[in-house]
Image (tube, rainbow over all chains, first blue to last red; front, side, top):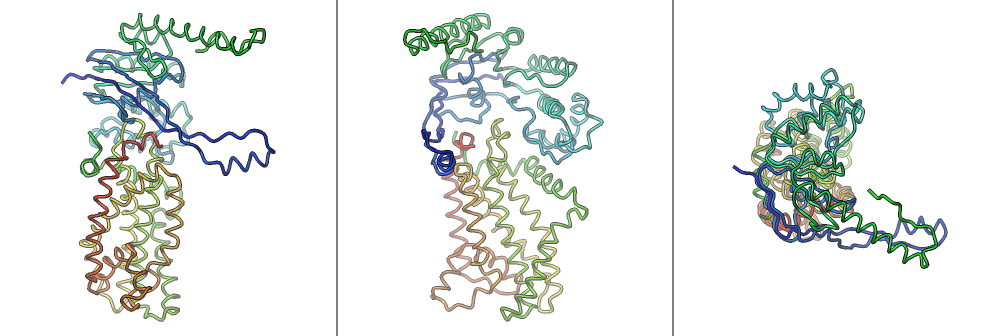
Length: 275
Length: 263
């Protein structure tokens, strides 16, 4: 069956809570208000009118500045967040590589944690048995298989998480940012496997700031700006569009800062590059 | 499509690997560092039933041959329900990373908390059997009535725990509130004391009979002790199961999709 992702006017509105701010007062007052103030509920529109088609064979880079909605869109694609408006159809088995070192049981051994995470991914227990060795092998942690997970360093945990999450080929891969932990040789190995998984997947969506990686892995780019689709097209065009948009935004911010400074004599609060 | 409680529950039951394995792992790792290991699951129940049973049977003026098995059954069933409830209140927050990865079938996590409590219960059944064998008034084979009565408890815990889990993911107060309620609940429910001594229709009688925990415990306890189940209890549980289940279907359809946002 062909895999595809189709979004029509997808919007996501979420409640969030703000602690009311109190000006001045003594330190005791600050402490008391921190303990007694009720958080207030607001609504924020994180995604709005998102419409796109991703077909089989597409490798899409999600491009946008911090807070533009890349991770939120990925979470919608994984199925964690249900859109409040519009419709989203996803066909194909999905695997998200969003948080690699979470979801372990720190008291369990590596061996047990492989079972835990793999069954959480929906892999039948009988199949997991066949995967354990290759996972331990790939993460180069075979000699620690019966140690408790909490004795591992965070880099080792990430390696294990990566090895488990990429142990099975899925139709659709959803990735958040390129990760940099682990030593050089492992990063190279992980990159190779990732590229091969990307090649094996029918659809890949990756949120990235790394333009080199985006150019290398992807054929299309989806530029997100303040929760809207600003551009969707070939990766090169998307990157140049993103560059243009960030320059426009930067200019707008600079202008706003100048206006706020009055005569513009004060020091500018905007630093040249923001991302 | 909206999330359906029944459909999710059936799917979860068909794929028990994750919740079965992770609840088992939780129990095993908890006791791994101890010297006595899994025996620690039995010790608190055995001590409670033995010590409190022999003291309170005097205070309350009951024959220990009746009172100790009575206490053992009441306490283990109560403990099962408390564990399901307490665990569920924070279970979804505790599995945030799984849910955010798109595993939004919440019944998996609820079943995990029930499975864990169920395992503790199975171990505690050994204490009940011990008490029944010890008591000259009891016949221990009556323990097998559990096979008929306990599924009703599990059924009710399934909807109840789901409600607690969904509400608990929205309001952090849920856990605290339930903790408070359960602490009094143990004393207000006929576990340490025998409930059928009040005159029908009196205020105390109502206080006992309005309590769902009383009926749930009584439903399991009476057949093991060789008593008939009160028809009121059967009617009460039938209504409770159906209404609770329907309410949960509605709650799940309406609110389950908000859970990832709340946590």
